[in-house]
Image (cartoon, rainbow over the protein chains, first blue to last red):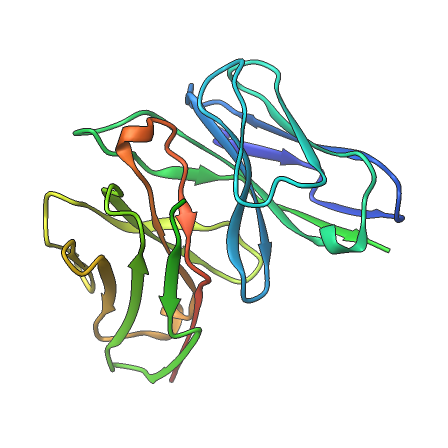
Length: 116
Length: 114
């Protein structure tokens, strides 16, 4: 099992360029997430998908779009990159519940994005 | 929505000492509280979690306590070792939402000095 796989690992964009971050999981998880990590800010939820065909905004969705392509894949798109989107992006997935509460989230290796 | 506050932001201890990191949450409906460890340049990985039906959980040198009334939970690391040096994140989620989404605290950078 590869777990959660993200591509690319590093990316440099110019302001205004667009790009898509790819994420795939092979654990048959229903839920998938995109987080961004900035110094002193922790991990902030951008978008999430509770099941195939559904997506919802998280804490910081502005400037991003997502697609839940199928159960395995969840992509994050920056339509017009801005320097404020310079960050490390993590994709994660988790399965349903135990005793009515949620379970462990597994993270990808991260994408370090720099917007100049 | 849920808000998770984590303190301290940095913590430096001598090898062998104990370390305590504290988190508070705002949504009383939250019922799952994991702790993640992130080593430099790596992905966050779960080290311990607790559900709201228990008050304490231990796994070797690490333990987590939960006070539902006060809405706070803490990570305790005893007999710290240099390899415990990392960033630690607490998080909270609601089982009723059935989405599994986690809201994280700001992180604590733990340095264990040999």
